[in-house]
Amino acid sequence: MTSAPASASARTVLSSGLTAPKPIFDWFFALAGLSVLAVVVRAIYFTPIEALQGAAQKIYYIHVPSALGAYIAVGITALMSIVYLWLHDERADRLAEASAEVALVFITVVLTTGPIWAHKIWGAWWVWWDMRLTFTLFLWFIVAAYLVLRDGIEDAAMRGRYGAVLAILGALLIPFIHLSVYLFSARLHPMPVVLKPDKPSLPPEMLTTFLLAFVAFTLLCFALIRARYRIAVQRDLVTAFEGDGGSR
Image 1 (cartoon, rainbow, N blue to C red):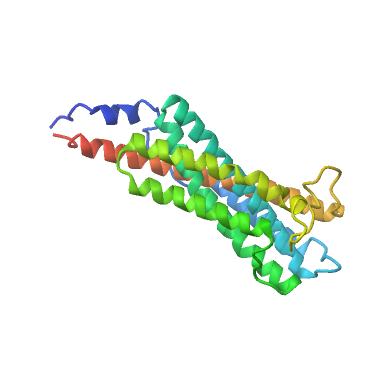
Image 2: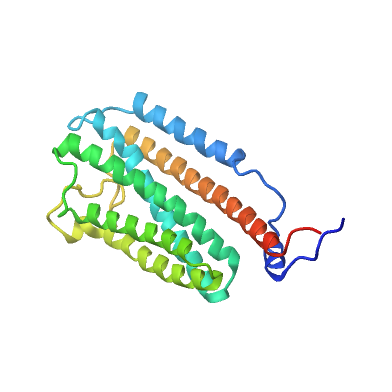
C-alpha cells in the first residue's frame, strides 16, 4: 500500500508548512481563558462599585474590551482580505475567515451585554437613534453575511475575492462606530472615558481593571483566531486529500 502523489490543491496546502497536527486548544488558549477569568474575579470582587450606576457598571469590563476585541478581529479580517486580493495567498484567506468567525462572537457579546447594561441604567433595552448601537448591529450583519457568502460559494478563488471585498467594506464601519458619540447628539452611549483625546477619567483602580480586561480579551481574541485557523488548515488538508482520492 503506497500513498498516491498529492494533487495540486493538496500540494498548495502542504506548502503552507502548517500540516503537522497541532492541538486546537493549547497553552496559549489556556492562558487567555485564565486571564479572562482572573479579570472577571477582579472586576466583581476587587474593583470599587461606581457611585451612580452601582454594580451594573461592572458590565463595562466585559462590554468595552469585547468591543475592542471585535475591532481587532474585524481589522485582521480586512487586512488579510487585502493581502489575499494582492497576493492570492490562501493562508491570508484562511486567516480572514478565522478572524471573521471570532469577530462575530465578540460582536454578539457586545450586543448582548450592552442592552443589559442600558436597561439597568437608562431603562431601555434598545433605541435605534443611538447610532453606535445601530452601527454595531450593522457590523454584526455584515460579518454574518461574509460568513454566509463564504459558505454559499464553492469556487475558492471567487469565494476569497467576494468575501474580501465585503470584509473591507465592513471594516470601514469601525471609525463611524467609535466616532458616533461625537457625530450624533441623540444617543444613549456616554462620551468615552478611556478612549478619548486627553487622559482617561476612570479612577486608578477602575482603570487598572479595564486595562487588564483589555489585555485579557485581546489574548482571548488572538487565541480563538489561532485555534480557528488551525481548524481551517486541517479542514483544507482533508478536503485536498479527499479530492486527490486519498491513499491507494
